[in-house]
Length: 114
Image 1 (spheres, rainbow, N blue to C red):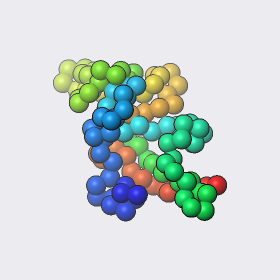
Image 2: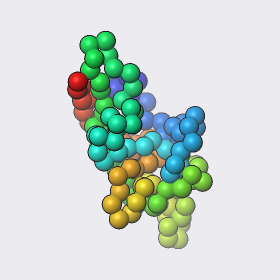
Image 3: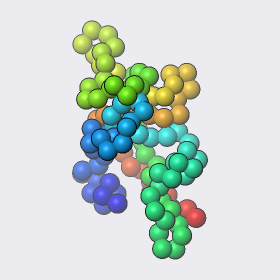
Image 4: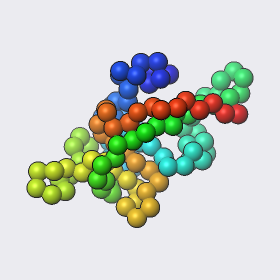
């Protein structure tokens, strides 16, 4: 609710994952497939009418690296003084992205479904 009602605050990537053990490092996690979100019960509790909600977001992922639980704070360097911009579960066919910058994700649509 706070992401939708207070778009200025947006996502707080480095605050995410601190309560749980992140698989691919700290950041805000996004899935390619809505099925992953629903089956993993990441939508939160259903509304009183039985509907669920999820955000469809636009991401600026830049150049990703394969995520690692040790990625806390900044991502590793990729070339010279340039860092990777996001983490993924697989470089060949990513299904999960983790971004660490507040401006890297924009909540474009709020989807309500039964």
